[in-house]
Image 1 (cartoon, rainbow, N blue to C red):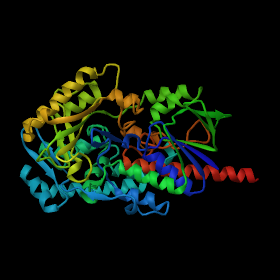
Image 2: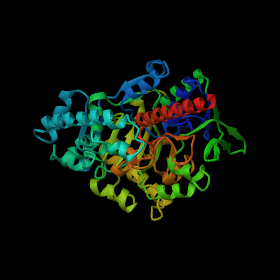
Image 3: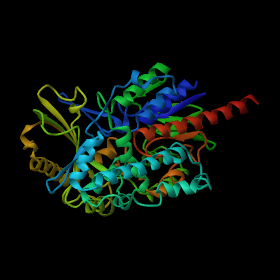
Image 4: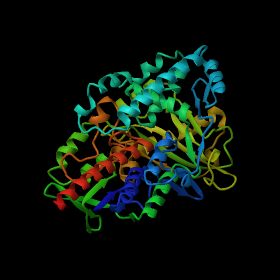
Length: 500
C-alpha cells in the first residue's frame, strides 16, 4: 500500500515515519526547501532563529511518538528545562517571574498579593484535574461525531473540566491582583486565542508549565522536525523538498494521488494532508467538494497572527531571560482590538525570546539573537495596513525595551528581518495569516473541529493545527497519530476487500 503525505510540518513528518514503520510505502512532498512548516528556521548574516514556536510543553507526547517507531527521544533530541520559566513586565514598572522551584514561586506570588501562594496551589490542583481529565477523555481521543463527544459518560467530564466556562473568570476565582490574573491566563496566546474566549479547561496550560516544565531543544524548536526527519530517512520515507502539490486527484469520490506544481501526477492508495487546513481546502480540493467546504471554513473563527522581528544585536542584551513577556497598558482592551476590532492595540504586548540563554549557535561571538513576537489580528478586509503598522509596531518594541532598562537597541541591530501577517499567508501558506489556524473556542474543539478522515473524499486524511485535537507541537503530533490509526484501519479494510 502506498501513502502520499502533503507537507513536512511536525504533523506530516510524524505521520510519515509511523506509516512507513507500519509497512506502507511513503512519499512526502513539501513546497519549502526543507522540513518544519511553521516550526521552521530563519537564518541570515550568521544569526539563527526559530520561525514560529519557541516553547515546548508536554515532552512525554514526543517520547510516545518516537517510542511508537521503536526509538528513544533522547537519542535524537537534547532537551533542557527552562528555569525560570519567564519574566512578565507590566506597564507600572513591576515584574513577575515564574519559577519551577516552589519556594521561589511562592515568594514571587506573595510579593504581588498576600496569601496568593496558597491559592496558587489550589489553582494548580484544579489545573491538574483539568489536565488529567482532558487527556483521558478528550485530548487523546478522536471524535467522529458529536454523538461520540456528548455521551452519558463524557457530559459530566465536559462540565468538570470547564469546557462551558471561560478562562478569565476561572482564574479570577483564585487571584485578586490583576497582574497575577494576566500572568496565569495569557498562556492561551500559545494557541492564538483570548483568555476571555478560551474555555476554562485551558488552565491546564499553567499547570503543565509548573508540573512538567518548559523545555527547549539545544538548537531551537526546529530541532524537533529535524529529529523527525532523521527517523523518516532511517525508516525509508522518500522526501521530496521544493515540490509543492497543486491539487489532490479524486476519481469516483476517492483520493487516488496528487498533481504536483510541475504538472506531474503521483498515484497512491491514500493521501494525507498536513498543509494548513483552511488554505488547503481552497487550493487542493476539486469541485464540487471545494465550494461548500470553503464556505463553511469562512464562517469559522481564526486565531491571531503575529508580527515577527528577528533581530541580530551587537553585544548581549543583559537582563533578559530566555522567555520574556511585556504587557501593554490595557490588557483586556488589547484582546478586543486584536480579535474583535481587527486592529493593532495602541500599546502592544509582546514576547521576546533570547535563545542563547539556554541553547547554542544562534548568534556569532559577541552578538545576541532576539526573536520578538507581537500578537496582532489575522488578515481581514478591515485590517491594518502593514506597510504603515509594521514600522510603527517595531518602534513601539524598541521604545518599550529601552523604557524597561534594556538600553536603546536601535543602533545595536546589525541584522534584521520582519515577518507580517501578509507574509505568513503568502510565504508560509497560512490562511488569513493566522499563525495557529482555526481557533479553539468550545464550538471549534472536539467533534466541532475538522476530523482526520475527510467527510467527502474517501482515502483523504488530514492532520495539523486546525484538525482534532488542536494547535501546538504536541497536539499536532497527537493529530498525526489519529490520522495514522485511521489510515491503517482503512488500508486494512482495503486489503481485506482486495483479498476477498
